[in-house]
Image 1 (cartoon, rainbow, N blue to C red):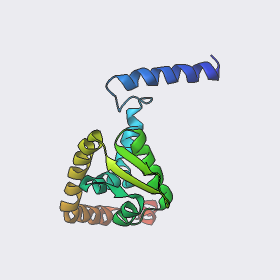
Image 2 (cartoon, rainbow, N blue to C red):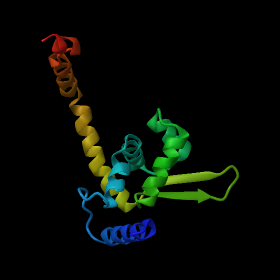
Image 3 (cartoon, one colour):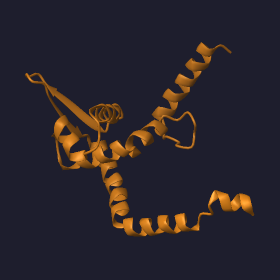
Image 4 (cartoon, rainbow, N blue to C red):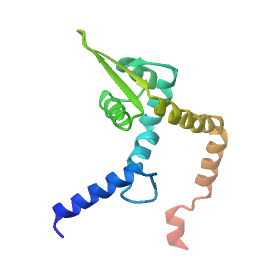
Length: 146
């Protein structure tokens, strides 16, 4: 089978799967890319930041902190493509672009926020587990000497 035919069949299979319920464990399922977008560091923070309403790009960047313009732009574009974020460009000078959550974006943002809340509430337990893990590690030199 030629590469072109294989790519065509894969695209057809992906289109069919996209119309049905996703399967995150299926290698070719498009739901995996949505999972990547929603659970990426910047995706999580963008979704949570947009929960309190519409924001301009510069407002989002300040609110999130530490994200580059390029990464925030790519993240918002991916979330927009997935139908989770709405981008509205106003025809004014200088350009004015607003970002907000779609109804589907609000739904997923609530789930992501619950995960973020759990992480924040349990950071002391997580830090203790990390310390315990590091203390239990055997140095490489001791393993070779044994």
